[in-house]
Length: 222
Length: 284
Image 1: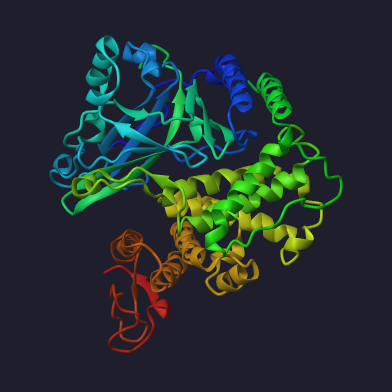
Image 2: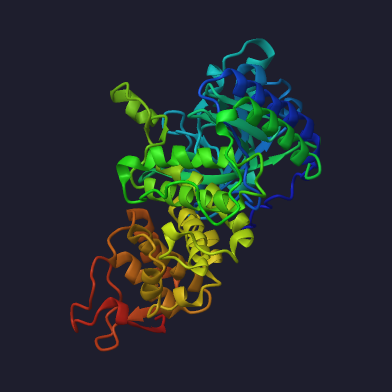
């Protein structure tokens, strides 16, 4: 069985340069907050020299890839920023070939327990697509493009779907950066350095899968 | 971005710093830390220690060049604090969905959040290390040498990745530490580095994983030492035993009785030879 073609199907675009203006506004917003909030201290910036967590899953039988599309509105057909939701695309499939491999694992909403860990330890909680706080086109985009929670197919047959993470108070996102606030300390974090965790049902119980997130701009082709 | 971000960051942080004047600290020209070194082992004060050290990073953000020494040590200690706190977390995450069925429980302690934060801070410290490599270790931390500090940072990242389930990536960091890949020298070297005791079995796991492709007998010995520590999660032990029993290209047997490795045992039931003294033979 062929190994997944990690990082080859989408060409990573120059998201960093296009994000610069967004970061400016984000940081200036933080400065404004600093003036208004109490206690207020300032910003700890993202450490350079950290490549992020491995973008292959931590599991030997399941392969997973998690992508944060910095211009997700193009891909989803709606901008979820207003709903204070961060969409992360996930593709999960089996990479071993025991008999009935595609029937051994399942993703279920009751046991998924998806979490997005930002690099400073801030945790974003998964919300079901039908619970995304929005209406009309945005709600439809969430429900139509949410990750299929069912039996896990083989990697070749696996399709990408979105997990939606609620932005708690004190967390804001622009492009592939987020600004978090804890104890009055604002941190600029790079979403490329985030870790996605979720659970898969197996015949022996649930198993936690971890995979590093990579940010990409959606180039319009795949 | 690299050309643009520093200026925008500097602008925002300068504005932020000006507005929050209480955050500013004068540059420290000498090798003084300017803050109290926390006792990593004091579980009850880890959260407040993290709070204080994060303030050091914030208050030195406006002039990081002058404060590289303070920023390095604050990051190093933050990495140590979060790594230790992963065993007794104060950061939280939402409760698992299954818990909500039985009770409306609140947030639960998050080991993963601490490990992620530990790797983040250790990465900052590793980035800053070349700037402080020629400067003396602060008096408060004089039991360490500069080389020890660098090795400890590597181990904090490597064991952090291993504890998250990324053993392969953690092992890559270990590959440049020959003493840690020798079963006869590893424990002595870890004691010299004063690595926290709860991290030691994870180094054995990483060493085992790293050696699998080059020296299966040494990989086996590290796996046995790791398993016998009794301090690893069940899934990690299972993964190591699966490799011993079916993953290795050779079989590990008692040199006297030829009995194979038995999970759950520490020695051959026939000869009494310890598992760690088994030898490798062609798989039958």
